[in-house]
Image 1 (cartoon, rainbow, N blue to C red):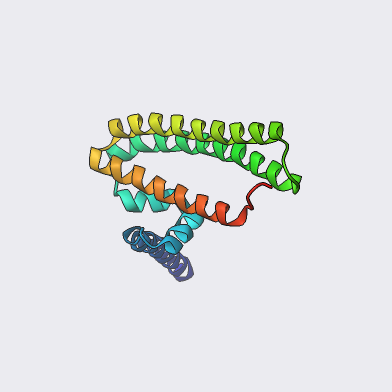
Image 2 (spheres, rainbow, N blue to C red; image 1 turned 90 degrees about the vertical axis):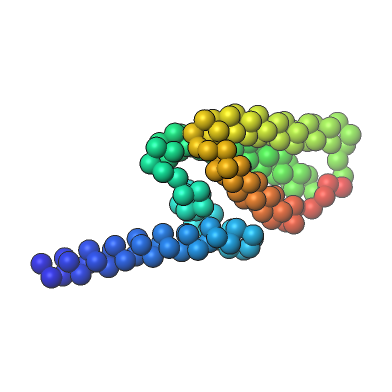
Amino acid sequence: MKKILVALALGMAMITGTCAVAQDKAAGVTDLQALRAAVKTDKRAFVAATLGLTDAEAKKFWPAYDDYQLTLDASNRQRNLVIEDVIALNKPLTDANARRLAGEFVAADELEIKARRKLLTRVLKAVPATKAARYMQLEDKIRDAAAYDIAAAIPLVK
């Protein structure tokens, strides 16, 4: 019985410690390395710690968040396919291929922008405008950090 209580207390301490770390990281969202680490560990927990949602807000917010993440994943997959095409060529592009790739990049961006507009509308219905703005800014920071990492790793087309 004593071992069970010790194990339970240890488990609770680990969970509480993880939440405290997420809250500490939420406070420093201007530190891009901390932002990357927090998002990589558990983006949902990081968003939750940053926004401090009430139960009523969370009930409305998380479905909008989940839908957006699915659309964002689709947009990222589309963009990744274009990047893979660019890398796979490893030679100068023809004009026709360059037009196609550029159009596919824009299409991926348009899919994401459409999803962001829908997200903002839903989030504004779920939480106060200040939390909605904070969340949208947080998503921007996360997206921008990822975009920087991709841009730094991908060469320009030839």
